[in-house]
Image (cartoon, rainbow, N blue to C red; front, side):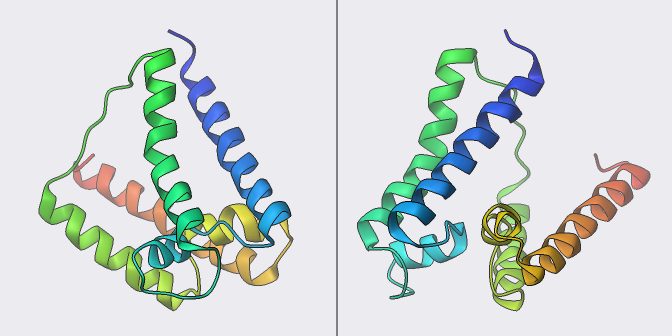
Length: 140
C-alpha cells in the first residue's frame, strides 16, 4: 500500500483538475453546494443539470476508483443524527458565506478572490478549533 500522503496528493490533483476543467471549459465555478442545488433542481443558474449530476456523482465514484486501485482506507462515520446536524450546519454556513468550501477554498483561492480568502480563513480556523476542542474533551 502506498504512503498515506499519496491519497491526499492524488485526490487534490483530481479535485484541482476537475475545477480547472469546469472553469476553463464551462466558465463556471466548481462549488459542490451550487452543483448539488442545481442537480436536485433547487437552483437554475450555473451548469446544466447533467453536468451538475456528473460532478456530484464523480466525487464518490472517484474515491471508489482510487480505493479499488490502492486499497480502501479505514473509514469511520459518526451517527446518522450527527451527520444530519452537520449537514444542516454546513448548509447554513454555505448560505451565510455565499458558497462552500470547494467553491471558496479551491476555486476562489486559485483566482485570488479576497472574499474567498476571508471565507477560507474562517472555515479553516473554525475546523482547527473544533478538532482541537474535540481532542481536548476526548471526542476524537
